[in-house]
Structure formats: structure tokens, C-alpha cells
Amino acid sequence: MSQTIAVLGAAGVQGGSVVRAFLKDKSWKVRGITRDPSKDAAKALASQGVEVVAANIDDEQSLIKAFEGCQVVFAVTNFWEHMFMGKDAHQSRDIEVEQGIKIAAAASKVSSLKHYIWSSLPGGEKTSNGKFPVPHCDSKAIIDEHIHSKMPDLAKKTTFLWVGFYGTNLVYFPLCKPNMLATAGKYVWIQPSPAHVTLPMAGDVSVNIGVFTHAIVAHPEVSLPAKYAMVLTGEPTMVETLKTWSEVSGKEAEYIEVSPQVFDSLWPKFGGEMAAQFTWGAEVKSWVNFREGLLGAKELGIENELVGFKGCLEGLKEQLV
Image (tube, rainbow, N blue to C red; front, side, top):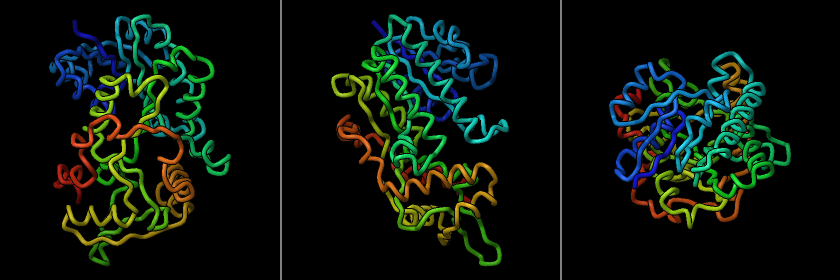
């Protein structure tokens, strides 16, 4: 008998990756949760065999209804959406916390639920004793703590999935994309971080998040109860990351470190938030050290299924410059 996974953000980067991974497994039915099933993206999902259901993450009752009968829920929120709508970083953090708690509360009320996968991040403020707050990371960590402390029964069914730095950030995210400096005749990568600092690289997230989630669900004896896993394909330095971009694009590039203040002036509001993450990252070195027993590709048996950073860029080579 087939089981059903409900996927929030089914038309987005993370949810879309999960949808594609589970559509390949005919023992699973996929339910895509969306605000508006009439949109083209939702119709495209339906054409692939996804059961598209309407729900609003600000409405707990609609989520309970959307999750009914599902054995697994993949939950994700979108901090950056609120930033794009004009909120500042701290307002966006608070909205995301409220939404994440509502999603978890809804899942906790679904009797059929066996496994809850929550797309999270380690908190900058928590891991630095308050020295380096990073709102888009802190929000997820706050939700984690709420699940642990206020929803112990759900926590036992939860795998907390940390997703590292998207390889596609160097393709699609303006703040992280190398730019041509016309007067020099070469590309420059301007970032608020020392060149030697490492990135927790998640590689091609359009593939890897789904691979991780499928393995997490397939191996509850490893991923439960209340275990943490991380989508990680490597930890290259900033310079090594740019070198890979140059190799794939065929374009010469230089790394330029700027202060967080300059970065924020180049990309107001968004620059400050990213700079907060990089400043924290320079201090803490590696996310792997945050939690003992953190599950990776090896523990889940998926080392040969992931697409690394170079592979990610090679698949998008025509869009690099």
C-alpha cells in the first residue's frame, strides 16, 4: 500500500527537489501544498502526477486539512519572501518563527503522521553565545527549540534537516554572483568574508535536498528520533569556490573582500543579512561541529547520489555569465 508525503513549497527550490525525488519512487504518492492551485506552477505539478492541495501557512486549520492522511510532511518556510515584501530582517525572522510554529502545530495534530522533516538551520545567535545574530538562521533554530520543548511527541517524529549554501547562489542570487568589472576586463566576486573562510556547500540543491529527504524517510532507524542531518557536499574556501566557478565558466575572476558595511551599501538590507551570516561563518568555522551525531551523506548511504558544486555549475554553464 502506497504512502503519502505532503510537501510544502512544492513549486520552490527545496520542495520541488523533494517532489521530484519522491515521484521517482512509485511506492509514494506526493501531495504538493500551495497557496493557489490555479497558478501555472501548481498546474505543472498536477500534470506530473502530484496531488495539488491548497493551504496557507498562516492558517493552521488549512494546514491540518492539507496534511490529513499523510504519513510524512516536508516543511519549509521562506524568510527571504518577507524581505522582498519590505520587511526588515528582524521582522522577517519573527514572521518566519510564527509560520514555522503553526506548521509544526498542524503536523502534530495529524494522527497519520509518522515522520516530520523540518528544513532548518543552525542559529547564529545560539552558536555564538549571542555574539553573531543571523536572523534568517536564528528563526529556524527558534522553531527547533519550540518543537523540542513544546511539542515533544512531534519532536520524536522529526528529522531536522540543515541545508548548506546553495551552489546555485553563484548563478541566480545577485549578492553571490560574480560580476564583470569592465575596466579590468575580468570578473570579480565581492563578498564580506576573508578569502580563507569555508562555505558549508550543499551543491545542487535541486537534486540533493530530495535525495537527502528520501533517504531520511527510508531509514527512520537512522534518522529518528529527533535527529539532525545536513545537506553538505564539501567545505571549500571562498577562493576555492571562485576557482571552481572560473574553471566551469572559463572566465578569469578575482576575489575581493569588503566590509559588511560596504556590502550592505551595495545591496541595502539584503547585503546586511548575508554579511551577518558570513561574519558568523568566519567565527564558527564549520557547521559540522555544532551538533554531535549530525547525519551526513555517508550515514544515510547516499554519497554517490549527490551532485556537488562543480556539477551544479556545469549543469548551468550557459547561465554563469
